[in-house]
Image (cartoon, rainbow, N blue to C red; front, side, top):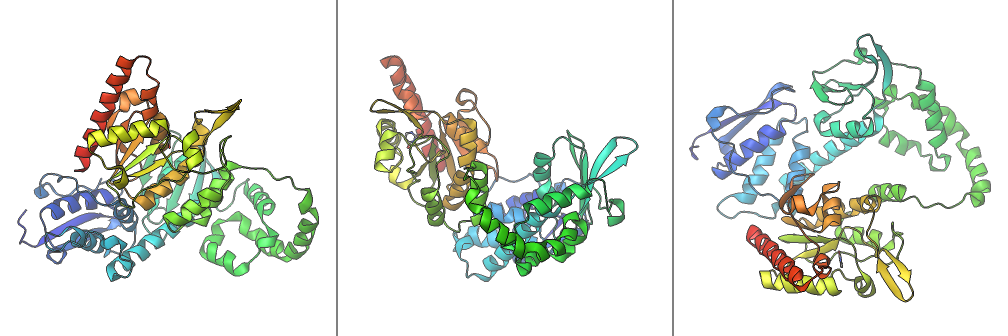
Length: 481
Ligand code: URA
């Protein structure tokens, strides 16, 4: 590509993430400044085109490595309805990577006008996603060809339907459903998701037999002690009310709120306190920590999700490191000293790091599970592996932690860490080595846990496995060099 020529980039309508990423790679490697680019997108969303650039743009381009926060920002802003979005995003990446005076950490400069604008756009998309997750209501229709299907109507502000699709697939995997919007539609038939053309409100039913069920559910979950009409309107804007069966119950619930609160106060002492880890995680998500320090405070104060120690061992190391190592959980020594990897496995790990030429103090080190899970045998506390459910409960913390830390490469030490990072169990035997973790395609590496070296049956086995571990670490060192 001629770096002095003016470029015209035509992307698909809607949210063309694939097309934009491809253009970004090609333009960025060719050092084309933003003022030489004319970005345009088709007016209607092209939901079937697949976002390819014309072949005249040549090969797809070498991947460019961007901080995770920038990748997240791109994913969200691309969904925005403002046609300027591609030019603004490219300007950010260009300024971060331009050959002369690159502003490598520009995305962290909240006072920069461009960063502020993009952050506000991402926030608006996030809000729209949240509204869609909360306010889509399915109504049953009887399709003569396929039988019952559940159909919902929703009006998003931005092009978010593809971004939100997995959320609904995960929640409603076993029914046929469709979500119609003026910006495109989603169709799920219990095995495949299709993205279709825009729909109209008239295509979706206004009422179904479960309407009463929704209302009863809402009435039973409505907390009269939290009644705040202004906030309700803010969180559930009137625009969505027509789609929500439960809104018809609001006037009467608000009217009765004061007397219900009095009754609740009388009854409160009788309600048993029950720990529910899933709710605890959801509550933490609501709290939305704004920094790693805030997240750590939440973790330190929270109840453990495992039977064992109540002391949380937090991650340690610099922010924005080249590498973050994720272990399984603190052991006996880690629990006593309040630091990760300081016991026997930690000492072996330190030796291997040194041999591989990796400076531990420059890496971030944490665990998938933040508390020591053990059973007491006499004076000894015997380590217990976390279950899949326990790993899942801690996973939100780990992801949030890595979002703040933003390592270039995440290394899973052992199967529990790999499980936590991948979101499902992986065998080390089949996945050892370079790996891409889900989400924003986090660059990663999977290797054994150092404690597995201590458990080898013979000295020969131990030596062989230790050498293989050091080789993995050396490979990691080369990857980030
Ligand atoms: N094993 C781990 O996985 N983490 C530690 O912190 C110590 C041992």
